[in-house]
Length: 268
Image (cartoon, rainbow, N blue to C red):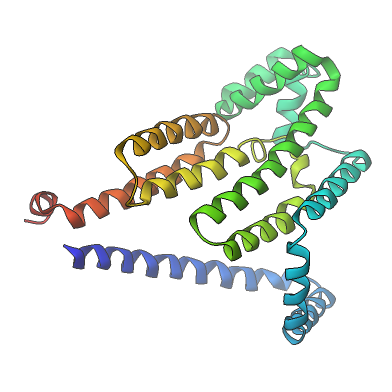
């Protein structure tokens, strides 16, 4: 049975490798749309990063020791971007926002939500804030987006510290700050930002389920918490269910590997 277990994961790894190679080649192919100057600049930066990798490592270690100052710099950057932004909302998010703030006819937003029921929770979330705070609700929700984006960095750091190592936690924190913190991504009034803390919690609750040394009581509490967190996140981002399905798939395969009864039923 252990052979089947290892074979299954070997096949899955190769499948994921093929997918990764496919999208890497697609990215290289679409680089043709970039200008020659951009490609030369990217190649030059990559070469300099390789040649100066030791200096970059020292800089990284020096910066990562001051996480509080780093988060203060991130918050300052985000506030500057927020106050200088001229256009906060576009596309589907704009339709939901204008409907929730009653800038759109009720019949129009009703028709839109009938065609796109996945945006109903977002509409209700924004309409609630509009009913409570009026037009100033936009700034309150942007402030909450700042909170959601930044608290996720703390959750990812502490979770990586607990389940992996300090080095991994530092790397996760740095990548998140670089990709999300120092970006205008938090301005999105769509379903991307509010679920971020819940998704981070979901990841570490799943990792806790996969641990072998959990007591039955702690395991039950963790399952209940995972269910509540996933339910809340699912309202805004249905794709969060994928992680839970993957986790229980792994648990199922591990149980097959241990239980001869399952082995006999599935593979007589």
